Length: 228
Image (tube, one colour):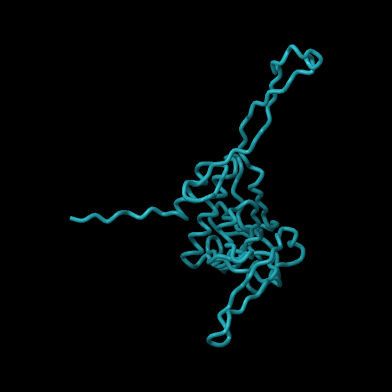
């Protein structure tokens, strides 16, 4: 999924949009199901197709979502639009947008192996008047900001799935012709996906930390108010 980060001011004095493609983020952070259709959750918005050049659309995951608008006249039904989108965007300068992006960064950091660096979203251009061209912002040894040409980073989190070994007993080919011997004499191992489930809902993740982070965001515990 192609993500556009709007107004992300870190190493970005001109407030140029940033892009990154991530596969494997929890769908419940983006969508809700209603009447069999997907709808975007706030603070996400559908990105504008004309802002996504064709040479980077191989990073997109096209999908159909439903948009709902208030009725044109009072007493009429709401207006429903089914639209095909290529990516989504989020406003980092809003509190919900900042919180959501911080959650995504933590999720990526906890999922990637320790020896891999977290990709940095790239700027879409040098400034608001320049053509589309992607750069990675980087600080020099003297602290000045430089723009290094780089493609849009792609992170596939689905590759980093923890596995456990499950013993499967199979009969040895040496005793197939001897019905008197019924003991399984060979043991093979096969990897199976290990997942952890949230105690409050059916959310699963391959690490306990991922489930804890989901629980903190989606199922915050309310403190009981005592009486004196």
